[in-house]
Image (cartoon, rainbow, N blue to C red):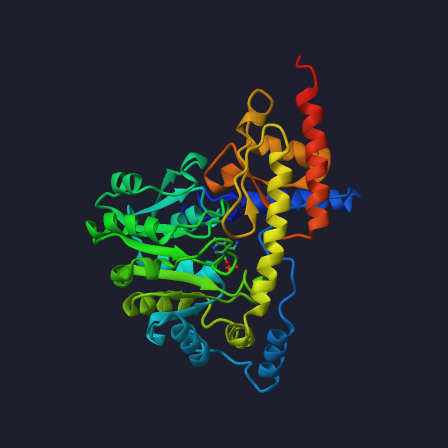
Length: 399
Ligand code: PMP
């Protein structure tokens, strides 16, 4: 028998230092464990629509597979899907890369452009993966807190003050996960005015929740067309068409950037799934009524969620303009009762069986994120449980 040898121990790469298991995954795992123990858990912690993929999209994938679309695809995407994405965006196919989810588009962007010491400005709250993707690509996240008092949005002053010679990217996300904030055309134009003076700063605009907007949506590409030669728009089918498992997203940007992102993708995953690209093409070409119907359902769920949250003492929650998350400020409730937002989430899960995600996972402590991509009855039940538990807590005489 060989003796245990420490040199055989697993040694993670330094690029992984500081990258922990996502807090969302941890909460979801604890919720799953509680369910296995027979507890009645309502997990409002995950970020995917509860609707099925539209049947005609599934049918298109089926037909594509039967017709032999089962082989490697060109690295940047099938010609048909690239052309359709380009056509709908008013761009050329050379400006489009199809990837394995919007997440891979973000990763490709950073891997293709960042060198050690490069900075990426990200307004907080931001989607949990942003900072870790930047770190894995060797860059440095520069987090700018954008609290509720500024509607969770970056101001031109903040942007101007944060730009250094090392700044490579500004990462924007509208509608935002987790805040639901949407930048208006005017707000984008003001940010673009600042960027005009700093031609070395490029913009990644993540618009994956475009079709889940309850107020008018503007693409950064339309608000600042003169910056298109340094803008990449990120989008995909995951959220709008309930296709999270199909893993198709795309980037639309300058051809030279797309070419380098394609080189990265070519060495990591190659072209995205053939049948999934056929499905995504069918989704893009389908009649959009289903998007409207689903948006209306989400709007009703949003209103039920916001009313319920604001009825709970210690929580303040503005109505999000887009996406399917509420991001209440819980600082009043946390103050003097919990160490932080993560402790509040843990207590809620154990006490009520409701799983939420702490705001610190999004770079904004003192909040929690709750997804309303669930049946309204479930949302109402979760809110009732939360209200009852929090009422009991806040009315208990303090020690
Ligand atoms: N961007 C944001 C803001 C998201 O919320 C998500 C999914 N949670 C993604 C990108 C990733 O999307 P995909 O599943 O297409 O990789």
